[in-house]
Amino acid sequence: MTRDELKQRMNAAIEANAERIVALGERIRRQPELGFKEVKTAALVADVFREIGLAPKTGLALTGVRADVAGGAGPGPTFAVMGELDGLVVQGHPEADTATGAAHACGHNAQVAGMLGAAIGLTATKAMEHLAGRVAFFAVPAEEGGDLEWRLEQVRAGRLELLGGKCELLRLGHLDDVDLAMMIHTTPRAEDGAVAIPRSNNGRFGKTVRFVGKAAHAGAAPHTGVNALYAAHIALMGINAVRETFRDEDTVRVHPILTHGGSQVNVIPGEARLETYVRGRTLEAIREANTRVDRALRAGALALGATVEIETLPGYLPLTCDPTMASVFKVNAETMFGAGACRDAGHRAGSTDMGDVSQVMPVLHPYMGGARGTGHAADYAIADPHMAYVMPARALAAMVVDLLWDGAGRAREVVATAKPALTRDAYVKFQRDIRKREVYES
Picture (tube, rainbow, N blue to C red):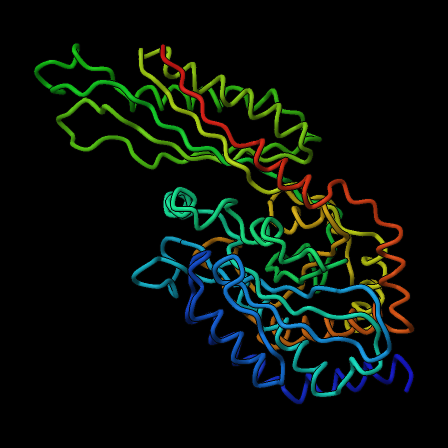
């Protein structure tokens, strides 16, 4: 059997299971769960793995699920095919969970369906008998941020250390035996077309901020209080004022939210709280922007005579897509969608914990259509289920074949030419060194 014949057999098997794959994506869409709490979705993934003859490992970084298939053509690199389990809170989304607010407004349900569809195709055709190395199908938790106070409670309780799912998987050693990895993210953006490959993504730090003032009667004695809310307002204005000092090429993004501004209208707020991300193209840009944001936060406290507690949290590192993997994927994508269909997405200003994985091994993080609306917004929806759920399965399965065919020659080439910035141990140390808590008393 030739490589192309094997890929054609897998395409046929995936298309024969298209209704099943679409049903999985839709079922996950209807049961959105927040990060590290994806219990129902993880159980569904494990059940599907068992149904197709795989032996899943569960509870990885709380809710992750992994199932491996060894190649029958000899040893070689381990290639992880990933899908993200979690949704996120989007106010007003028509399919949001009424209890948690969670919704699949970023297409993670399609990622998981595509990953499972690839596993179905590979096992149905016994394709791994013709391939070397190993493939690890991995449903990973908690890519989306948010739900921060709950996550910090888990950190304090010792159940988590890092706040992203892939970050925790790296820390805990669940990716130690993986040599290269990829996933396909759904996109609603017209400029991405049917399929697009980014060169890179922003990284980010997280921050929690607490202004402490002095409560007082807002009508009778405001002069005796220290208004923590006003200190936060001035800090926010300071952040806005320094935006013009960020260089365009650094793609810095700072987007704070006020999570608490007072307890009662007739009481001068004695406490106010903010959360924010500080994003940038490089770690140097993130660090520089973070310093300026901290300065604005201290200025707000100084102006009102308040105290500010600033906690800087490890976030996600910048993503770089491996060029060799990208070239292999582009050939498959244009076979599926036509010559010239695979677009160059350039640099994207959002952040993903796939960036953390890219710092320790070669990765690929392309985008594929099938959605409409705006990512992370109330109008986000799957518009073309076959495109969103089935075509990623075919693309992922094709990548497994191309990378692991002929003694896993292309996978070996990827691993040999990649130059990751960090070892796994160095990555964990780096993340731990980022975290700090500072108190500034005016």
